Length: 395
Image: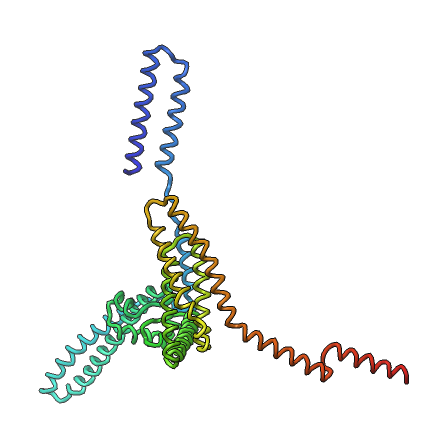
């Protein structure tokens, strides 16, 4: 509805309301509140008219221009400003017209050259002029096409400063090879100031900072892959029995992780996260020191299978639509047992380092004894300083 329609409707409603108020007052004979009611009605109608004619909050031309300038300032480190191709197209049209006219003259003088030998020079001149005009037209139209493409690439890249080549090619309606060629040429000419491709040339990055982040991510991914490859090689080189233990361990870890994802209770989830971390650390130590696998008989044949059985039971209890007293009690029983299981697993992991701790303690004890014998401990050094001071006083 337009503002005019709103105005008509508001005035019509106000007039009808005034008529009704006056009629009611005449019928009842009560005029004491008539003036007050009419004032309230007029005030309400005035507010409605103000709202109907309130100007929308449209940004001014100056604000739009300021926003555009700020946007261009942000893009300045990455792209040249957008360029118009109108001038190139005009010159191309002029070159085309010149080629057509000089071509016609060339044809005419060529015919005349068959009759008059003097026209041969003129035909050659106009032929060269035709070729020059045609070359100018082709060059200018090609430059105009390149500028238009640059403006399109700039538009598509200005939001994120990177783009997947297949997606960009689809937006540009060009073959992927053409897009790659265009971006390389524009980067080489400085139209795109910070252009980079990824390793496979499947992504274009228009920012040095983003490209450095990409390189860092690539290095981290390569290091992670190398680490995984080394782990796989280490596993393949293990004794078959140890490898079987590790494979079973990874299977149990997957089961614990899946149970954690399925259980929404944050307290239980925290306990399962702790359990997953301890179990993962246990098998990492076994992989590093395969001899420890001989100590995991009960852990692999009873503790882990029983734990998984409890987790499956807990998930079934949680899935029941009605949580009665027995189900609630069983859930609490399992929840409480998780702390006991984690403590037991942690004790097993701690036991793996017991021999190493004893070796370290023994090394420290031996080193202290040797240092004491050589007079290098703090007590021995103090005694040596005291003795030297006494000798000096006697002298």
